[in-house]
Image 1 (cartoon, rainbow, N blue to C red):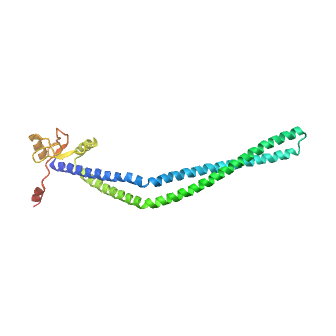
Image 2 (image 1 turned 30 degrees about the vertical axis):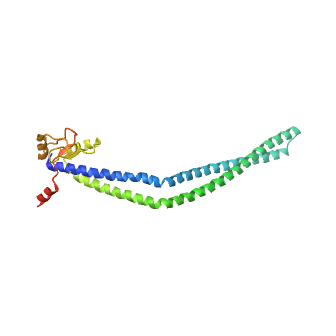
Image 3 (image 1 turned 90 degrees about the vertical axis):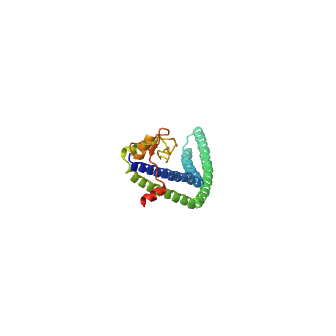
Length: 247
């Protein structure tokens, strides 16, 4: 592992940390959006239930009206039969059946009137809910738009960071990149750490044996800290060293 690839791994880790931080910021908008839309969602659910109930009542009312019409038609036929009965016994039987049909028809008509009253109340309730729903939507719309725009801005930032990451990752040898990502997938927060000036691990501060320090500083094979397991990189140059080298 060259000194350059060590530096690139550190850069990769830094940008991964930026991506994770930006992703956490984006996720924070989820609960806020849910909270803002809670009233709207509740009213939308109540409105859907009220409309479903109205549909059920309408079907019940149609069923009762149809049943009442059928019984009325049956009653008319029974009235016609009275004109052709041949004796008192047949007449009594027709009258008895007609009374039963009439009572059943009146029961259907009475129930239909009750259902019509329920339909009227359901329509009034739907009207109230629609007004409340529209009012709630108008009230939360500005805040919802603000949150969505902020969330989208963070997503744009994440997309740009991912693009930068791809460029950095392409500079890391594939075997080292795979090794780095395998460790990262295990949930480690720090995968690469630079040695301190006095030769300690930059993550756990355990002193690294001098021979391993020299290998890390030379940019040789990939070396891991025996104490915490991070990949070790050469010490990052101090700001004044960077300025001096540029001069």
